[in-house]
Image 1: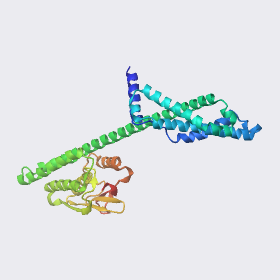
Image 2: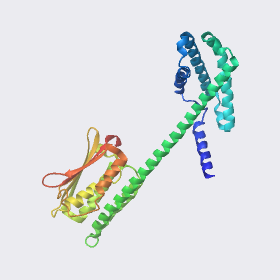
Image 3: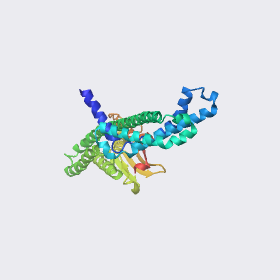
Image 4: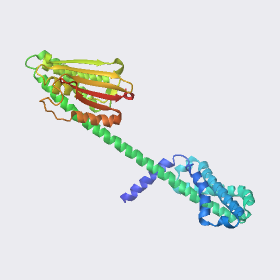
Length: 365
C-alpha cells in the first residue's frame, strides 16, 4: 500500500510539472519524424530500388510526406488543447487529446490526398485505410512524445532534489566546521582575560567587553554564510587587543586594508584562525615576542589577505594545538569557492617567521 501511494504521488508530481499548461511535445522529435520513414522503408524492403527506382522514390517520398503530415497534425493537436483541460481528470485529458488528434489527422489526410495521388496513386487508393494508418502513426508518435516529456520532468525533478541534497550537505559541513573553529579561539580568549581579573579590574572589564563582542560575532557567524571583510577584521582587532592585554609589549600588530575591500564578502571566521596561529605559534613562542601584520589588497583576479608574523618560524613552536585550524579552513574554502580560492602557507624568511596568504575570487567582493 505504501509503494502504491508513493507511485501515485510520483505520478501526481509528474502531472503537476508537465500539465501546468497545454502539453507540448518536444520539437526535436520532428527530426525523428523526418528521418525514420526512409530508414524503415529501406530496412523493411531493402530491394525496393532494384526493380523500379522511380516508383520506389515516389513511394518513399509519399511515405515521408504523409508521416510528416501526421506528426505535424499531432503537434498541432497538442498545442490547441486549452490549458483548462489539463486540470481535469487524466481520462478526460487523454480523451480530449485523442479526439483532437484524430480530427487533425483526418483533415490532414484529406488536404494532402491530391498531392499524394500525384506522387504515388497506389498510396491513396484506399482513403479509409490510409486514414487509419495515419491515426496509428500519430498515436504512436504522441505516445513517444508524451513519454519523453514525462521522463524529462522526472529526471529534472531528480536533478533538482540531488542538487538540493548536495547543497544541504555542504551547508551542514560548513556549519560543523565553523562550529569547530569557534570554541577553539574562544577558549584561548577566555584564558587571556582571566589573568587580568586580579591584577587590573578595569582592563579586565574592557577585555571582557571585547570578549562579549567576540562571542556575539561567533554566534552570528554560525548562522551566516558570508560577512563583510571589515566585520571580520573588527573581530580580528578585538582578538588581538585581548591577546595584547595578556602579553603586553611582547605582542604588536598592524592592520593594512584597502578601503575599497571593506565591503567584500567573506566566510565568517576566515582570517581569525590565521591570526590566532600567528600569535600562539609564532609571536608568543618567542621570549621577546614579535609582530603580526595583516594586509588585504586586490590584484588582477583576486583579493589577497595576508597574515604574517616574525615569530619562531614554521614547525618551531612548542605549543601543540588541535592541528585542525588550517585543514578546516582549507575545507571551508573548498566548500564555498571550490578551486577559485587558495590558502598558501610557509616561512616568511630564513630568520624565521610565518606567512599565510588567502586568495579569494574578486567576484566574491
